[in-house]
Amino acid sequence: MVSHRSRSAWWFPAVALVLTGWCANQYVPLMGWYQQERGLSELASTLVLASYVIGLLPALLFGGNWADRYGRKPFTLVALGCSLTASLVMMLGQFDPLGLYAGRVLTGLGMGLAMVAATTWVKHSAGTKGASRAGLSTSLGFALGPVLSAAIVGMSGSPEAAYAAHAASTLLWFIPLWLLAAEVDTRQVVIAVGPGTSAQNMRRFTWVVLPMAPWVFGLATSGFAIVPALVNNAQGPSLLVSTATVALTMGMGVLVQPLVERFNRPDSVRMIVLGLVVGLVAYAFIVLAALTGQVIVGLLGSFTAGCANGILLKGGLTQVLDLAAEAEAGKLTGRFYAMCYVGFLFPTLMALFRNLGDPLYFVLLLALACGLCLVLVLAGRRFLPGRGGLQVVEH
Image (tube, rainbow, N blue to C red):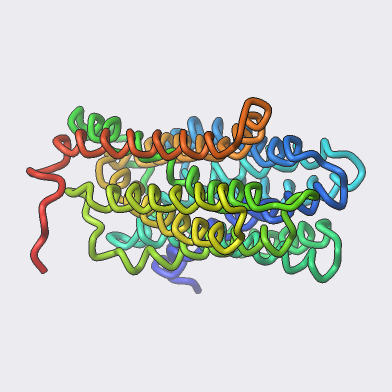
């Protein structure tokens, strides 16, 4: 007999986040491979990457409300089912590129539902450590997925083998999640219509969280998609370079989070400020990589962009889960991640910008926009609980 406590264990939805994150990024290191081996243009390969957002945004914007109302477990199961189906559909891309686009749309749908349902499930099961564990689980999936897919393709020469590995792993977890896991029941909170998110906290969401959100994944895509495009050869980035950039970017996104935990406070913006400042440093390296074409400089850009990604994800998610009323946690988490994924459009925008001018100028525009958002966050700290969002905390 499984106890209620064990059946409510946070790692049930956390592993679901890892698996959906794996699916979300398994295509990323293969962009150059598809250009070289299957004849996709740079624009087409980045459009496949960006098509993910088509499925993702509706899931983030509407899935949070549904999960808050009907429960997180059903939508976590749907998320895993979408991810499993996405990998199977991606396998059809060997016959027609439409399979890649369709698979990425399904990938986005699964990832979006996981982010609003599984994230809040982890939060309610893990208590005060919920935001940290949810963020780490998501980042771990984002980091493992590209490394595993690149390794499988490197050994087999077949992306279909990588997609099959993910589909099999997801199916193996879907069954125990369905049969054994039970979420902490929070639907009574929704039915009781407790106090909603306060006006002060909504201003905090608008002026502190939303300006930083696009840079969570904007810096990630800058590290693993823009950097390889800037240091590539005539045939496109090699699988090795693409894998190295994504491993560094997403790997540091995972590793940095425990290191900055002591600075992470919901009554302070210093975590977010730190992430944006590190992001500006990353763009300085990426500009230098564009000027020199040196891979090592690009890898430094990926390294620092990954650090910024992890810091911002942790800081932003902590703010959201702290300010949201219990019954609106899924909804506001969805809105937060919807803004985060604006950054997934950056590589496609750069590919389009190439028709107008040197991509170096596009990176400079990103750096300028990042700096402006930093100013907005500093101005918005007046909406934090207490006084002085940047106060030094004694330890």
